[in-house]
Amino acid sequence: VRLNEPFREAQILATGGFGARLARARGLLLRANEWSEGDGLDYGVARGASLTAGLDEFYGRALPGAVDEREYVSAAQVYARHALVVDDEGRDLGEAAWHESDLVQRLPGGRAWYVVDARTLRRSVRDRTVADLVDVARAAGGDVRPAVEFPFALPESPKLVEAPFVAVRVHAAVTHTIGGLRTDERARVLAGDGRPIPGLHAAGADAGGIFNGGYGSGLAAALVFGRIAAETALA
Image 1 (tube, helix red, strand yellow):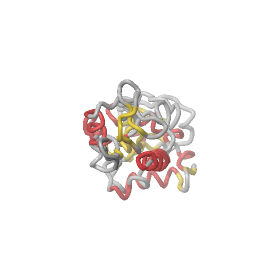
Image 2 (cartoon, rainbow, N blue to C red):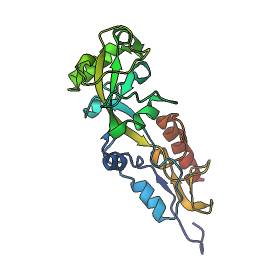
Image 3 (tube, rainbow, N blue to C red):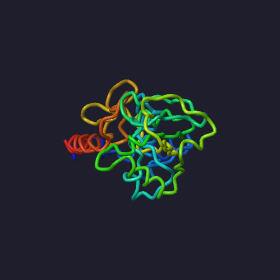
Image 4 (tube, rainbow, N blue to C red):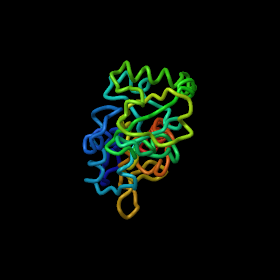
C-alpha cells in the first residue's frame, strides 16, 4: 500500500448474467441457475458502466417442458434442423440461421411444435437418435402426439417424407444471456466514454458482446475471461 494514494480493491463481477430475470419477463423456461438475476449488471451500471448490444438475446435450448436441473442437457430437443418447426396454427417458422439457439429465440410465445417423420426418427443426433430424444420428451411429461391429430394441415416440407409423422411440443428455455457489461480485452468494465472503470472487471455472462449475432461457447468465454479478469485484477 502506498501512502497518500487511495486504496481500491479490485472487483470481478461474475454473477451469471440476467437469464432468470429475462426468462421471467418473457414467460420462458429457465435452463440455468435461478440466481442469475442481473446483480452484476445492476452493480456495474450503478458504477457508470456501459452496456453492449444484444440485451434481448440469449443462448438457450428447446425443452419439452419444465424439467429437473439434472435433465437440462439430456432432455433438450436438439434436432430442429431436421424437423419441420410450426406454430400453433401450422405456420412454418423456418430454420436456424446460425445455431439452433437462434431459432429457439424466435419461437412465438416461446413455444412451437417439432414435427419429424419416420426417417428422421432414425437419424443420429450426437450420441442418440431423434427417436431417443422424443422418448425422453414423452417420459418427461411432454406433449408428444401423432401429427395427424393436429386441427390444421401441415405445410409441405422435404423434411416430411416417410409416415408416420410425430409432433413434439417444445418450449424455449434460457441458458444464459448474451448482452451485458461492456468490457475490453483485459476484462475491464468500460464506462460510457470508453475508459476502464478503476478496479472493476467482469467475466462469464456478466460480460456482454462476445456472441452478438451468433453463438460460440459460454463456458469457454467464462474460462478464458475469468482467468484474464483475475490476472488483470492482480496486476
